[in-house]
Image (cartoon, rainbow, N blue to C red; front, side):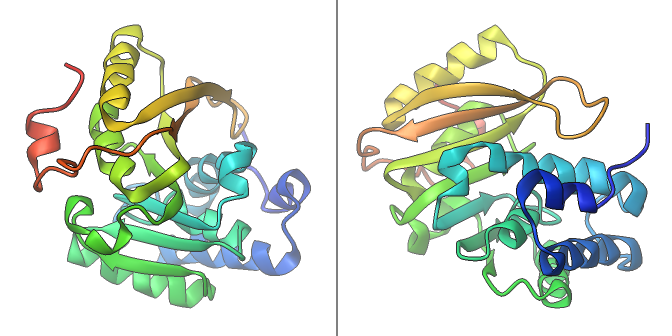
Length: 232
């Protein structure tokens, strides 16, 4: 299986030459920065695993049209950094609690010239500035879905969406997530099967909408969502 060339993203998502150069700079940051917080650093692998898998979020219309987007637990910057490149009129907040990861993110954002991305060094439960102000929240490989829902719901304005990157579907976990969503004022809109690159299997985007105000007791204090997840 050959990795996707960057030009494919231009054809698939309408990205221009400057945006493709910015994505190339992101790949370069992974390759040359020995503090990049990911095991996938080789450009030929990262173009699929990181860039293609992130940009597939553009297939969700509600995400593509969002203006204030948050990537929670962004790690090395995925999916938020490539999507900030693809959506230059959006405001992208990359939320990450670990200082060393934030240092890498600052270098990567500056090196790629991604002016619409800002780094938020905070636990998501403690980021009071973000409460209720965002059109979309994203998460990839962050936590069990009830936990992700609890992180996301307080950050969304009513009518906003959560897009959660997931692998193989699991009926029990999806039922637990649906129960947690109901407690948080959220409801599932769709589970979209995706194929971000050739040979990708069991890739899904779970999309939830905030349909009611999240109860005032959320977010619970840092760490509680993981220790006592909703929906179980």
